[in-house]
Amino acid sequence: MASFLRHEEMPPDVFHGSPLCMDQFKSLFGSARQPKVNENDIVAVDPTSKHIVVICRNQFYYFQALWPDGTVAVDENDIAEILSAIKEDSHKIDPEMSCQNAIGVLTTLPRKSWAVARENIEKTSDHNRSALELIDSALFVLVLDDFVPRDINEAASNMLHGSYNLEHKKDKYYQAGTCCNRWYDKLQIIVCADGTAGINFEHSAIDGHTALRFVSDIFAETIINFAQSITLSIYGKGRIPSVISAQVRRAACVSNGNGIDISPKKLSFELPLSLRDTIFFAETAIGDQVVSTETFVLEFKSYGKEFVKANRMSPDSFVQMTILLAYYQLYGKVVCAYEPVLTKHFYHGRTEAMRTSTEKAAAFCRKWCNHYATKEEKLQALRDATVEHSRLVKESAKGKGVDRHLFALKCIAEKNNMPVAPFFESGPWKTLNHTILSTSNCGNPSLRHFGFGPVVPDGFGIGYIIKDGCFHYSVSSKNRQTQRYVHTLERTLRQIGKLLRPTTSVFVEAPKVMNRVESMKLEYLDGMDYWGELDLAAPVQVPATTLKSNANDSSEVATKFLARVVRRESSVGLDFGEEVPFAGSPELTLRKARSTEDE
Image (cartoon, rainbow, N blue to C red):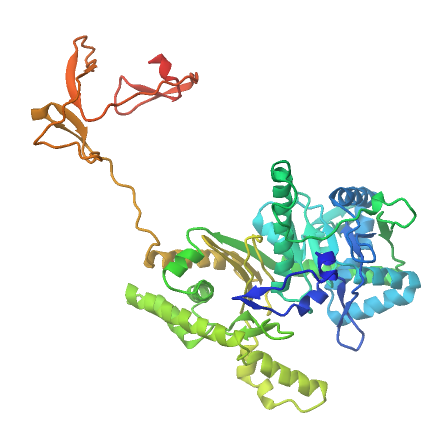
């Protein structure tokens, strides 16, 4: 995809027929957030980046993946060999020693502390400065974790902040978890030992929508490549078009002296003892953050987008109301909530803040929890709240929000040493910016979950994905009842679902009882007269059929039938399995699998 962008061949994002601004994609690859002493951080972008950095067991490697003109220089087999070599080399270092030199954990420090540490690293030697430049200018960072998540909750936690695992050696502990195996200043592709993969991206330069395009295109191209491989011999090349049609020119096949070196190389750092102390303290600090943060996911599969749309509500507004109502049912409060709204319709547009805790949303929460409210009143309150939410989302998408405008005025005043308006020190402004429920919708079938941490110490970070038949939530918080909130959220969805009308009226009809018409000596199943043969005034004349009676009577019984019942004999012998008694008759038994030839 980096090659695709380099050649400016990437189709633009489109929403409701209108193209969106693609400026953020310039910062997707080859970019890094860099801390500065006594200055604000900057985002540096190298538009000519050609290499990838790999982190494995806290050690750094890199290899060249693109030619100078942006053409891809490695294929899947080349990458597999490179990563195998890196993984083998990383196991040569003792895990404790690897932890002591885990320079990536410094990116978890507060930005001012990280700026000082980085400056010390650069001043130690020119070699260190060059190594940091290699990391900053890489296309992205590929993280290989020696970790297998036990469930989806652990997988989500690992993608968010890594794992925590203390190992004991001699008289002390060292961190063997994946929380140190990171570089948070860049786009990271994280792959666990069982193949579970995720993305962790630096938010300064790009938004979730941009990262989502990256993930969805890669996922789609992987599926298409497989489809192309299995249909090649039938339809030939080109029958199934690619999503990313980047050209591959393997450097390993160039032998005329004009090739490039794609072999992996290890990055090393010259670290004085003082910097190793800084690494240790950074590790203990992130350890506190990890153990105090909980992440639980909810995969609600009873209904989804189609069910909500059939009930004439916006799926996104509906999900937002479930988040507010779940909190209200658990704590009895309506709190400040935030949802970003895409503004890429504008040049260099990013997002506007949508505040979901409207008066109608608060009225809905109170009405729903009112023991004396009727079903109709509850549903009407829900509809009113979703309509109001949808209206405000549309206004925000058109650039008519207020949050970003007010924040920009505050930043301009501070940047130009102008007096800041007293409004920005007022209680309402502080309440508005203490977001308890920070939420975001980043849905796509290529993703199973999407999440982030809380933005205030007593808040929740809630990412959600809306799919046709399900809702997926990922909820994180620090020292709060995260799992209990998730359970309340699930209960809330079920409560609302019971009051909404179903999307279908299809049901299974009860079996019909066999009736016997004695006067005509006919046997038929009531309700099975599909062709109109059953005419009591003029009985159908059909040949008599010879049957054996159930009483083992050898006499022949002539009976008229409206249809002939044919038993199909099986030609496959399946005479195995234990016999199971049939409750309807003591003489009759069934087998789990049997042949009709035995009858």
